[in-house]
Image (cartoon, rainbow, N blue to C red):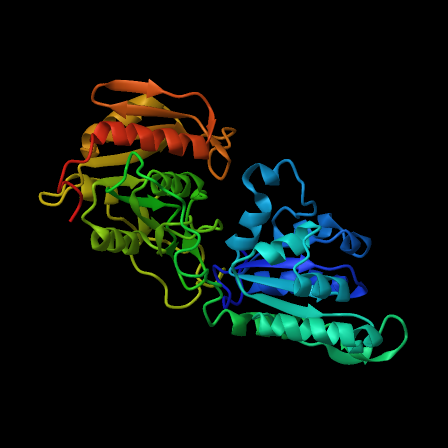
Length: 429
């Protein structure tokens, strides 16, 4: 990770870059955000391509740049929805007169305008345009409408224009925009739906009346205020299982480490960072009928976390003393009282897949292990597909390569069959 100021540590910023000469400032804005620990994903409008290149944006952000609404790769999983909801804040810089007009009137004819309409997060706009465009009554109406709808604005400032005129319309400087982003993130940026709207429609279902507790994503174990130990888990498989369980009628609690994907609809999602926080959250969510340990929990943490950033070169290479993190799967599987009726673990291995999975099944004393190969070249960690083997005391059931949503759907049906039909008064209390 980049080192420096950490005021935006762990925050996901979706940056929409409009087509104006001020787009060059977006390059510095990305750099400033990453200096402070923020993650940036960028969307370029067709007009923005005339001012900045996807290569320059991708190089600075460290993420792929998105341009097309009808991308066959992104839209395989409704990419414009995921993009718009995975962020903590949507920032439009430069916000051109055209983008402001589209957003104010709910138009959605390209990727940028579509995600502005689809997002469930607050929007911060940094306008940039000719002074007469900014002062035009139509722009003034559009800005007032967006403010009434909850959008925030930073700028524009007075200054020299590329057209040679002087006046209001100059985009705020990157550090001013960063300050506005930090201020916006001090409050909840989620825009809620009306009560009762947005839950998956379930009528009955194979897990109706059951409570399912799921862990997902990585854990982050701090070394000092800047650095941490982590892994490559994206949380896609665990989140997909939570979504499938909700669609099967279950009451679902999802305990997730830091991920860049949106919370599943209809699921009680609880966010944590460390393994110990995840364990405490799992214990608080029990009892449950089914427990699925899909999270890639860090095996170790630093014995003593530094109170200040460890400076390179001052005392040679630092020596880190590591201690084992709590084993959440074994803890739940071996509960003397209140053990879930079905405990499912995951075995992400790079060698001897089935041997290690069988050993884990016995050692943890769970009921089912979902084993998958995450070795180099498999693309499982962070990818869209998975190849799994279900390991129980009765043997191994191997599935072909499937997308993670289909793995989740089949796994939920398998768990429902293993758990058996709901008897009266049998659900978790």
